Image (cartoon, rainbow over all chains, first blue to last red; front, side):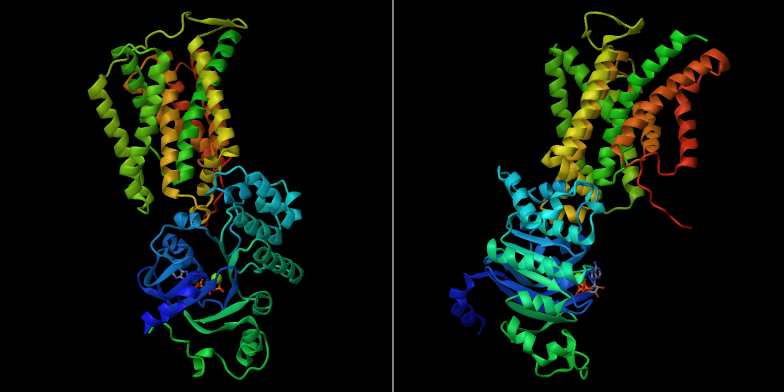
Length: 275
Length: 297
Ligand SMILES: Nc1ncnc2c1ncn2[C@@H]1O[C@H](COP(=O)(O)OP(=O)(O)OP(=O)(O)O)[C@@H](O)[C@H]1O
Ligand SMILES: [Mg+2]
């Protein structure tokens, strides 16, 4: 069963950047937050992970990037593989060196440093001589950052988000995890940030896993999407499929109001690949 | 009033104050990077000075060789101490970690007394002249050297934290450990680096002070004297540590002047900084440059 499935997928597997297999995450050794989550991100793809508050989206990203280990969280079951190699046991700093970089929820820039210092920090794992050129490259994507020479803590929310993304670019990641980049931004800025994310994905070929509350925007720029509820993936499909799905329209894109949750829907059994 | 004496004491205060500032910076470095209140800071000076003295007298090494070897030794010492003693304490309550550093302080004092005795030992002379004359003031060349070295160290720190890759990473670690790790920085490595730098630079201060006053167990008093400086400056501010050190240095000497001229209490020199400390904590609980954390009761 699983054997044959894997054998049949070897061709495709070489194209898989990130494979999360049936992971379970527990906080403080008792609080079970993820209950068997599986997802896959193809090389060069832009995949979105949607879900309501508290569904476990950030937890999933932190499990992947290893930052869970800094919060008393633990992956108690399942595996996570980057380019076919398991990374679930690695320290977060090692995972960054493997080319996976998480832009955490709430920007988390270093407030008592200037934007340029933040960008140089992003390149901490690099030792090459192109760091200066890459700072200019980031400024070409986010021109307004260049004019800000004060402390990053005084930047506006949108500028801080741009700095957070720019800082991630400085690490030259293959795979970027973005946790709610639209949080707290005005509609106009949301558009701008999403356009840049899409552009980075296309221009630089950076694979992206994008967690969002703003399902409409996320589905507009993503190739594929997963929907999470109470620590489980309840639905997945191409962005077009999801956008046209009646229930997604209803719960995430605004619309009818008959059902309260996917949990009540028998028809949305997750495709069982690992059983 | 004896203006010349006053001036001399102010200059002494500034010279000693820069040295306090350097040690206070070292203390703050550890506190900022790893949130450890290091009560064994004074012992870093003591160990550094004794090791250097021992290399110079026992092996007749030239000063520069002995000095460099001391720095290398202290770097390794700082790392080993952090990895073996402090690293297992990560996540333990603050008070437990404080008890450990107090324990280390007592332990190192005892070891140094056992190895080198309790008497003051002079450094072999390093400068050919006893004193130089600057604007009519008598200044020992060692004091001048102390001042120059302290200022160089401060400039070095400023450069390190502003421009070096490691310095930025240490600032990020001090800002938020999770953020630092998300950038690929090994927080454990940064802790070790902060202890290594702190031990090295403190030892340097210890050697400088030893050259001026001789080496003795009294050197570890520096660790205690540095507290008013650090708290005055605000515990987590490097600039504050320097300013605090300068203020304490000058204050001590002014207190001696006032005492010598009028009060004749005889001990104001040693305790004035602590009076200042109490006073300042009453007015500004987070020091002059510290981060304010408001605690409501
Ligand atoms: N460090 C932690 N310790 C204990 N429980 C946690 C921790 N972090 C998150 N949780 C719990 O795990 C659940 C999922 O949290 P998570 O942050 O992953 O949700 P989310 O989908 O990202 O939500 P949001 O959209 O609000 O960001 C929540 O119930 C939360 O209370
Ligand atoms: Mg979240």
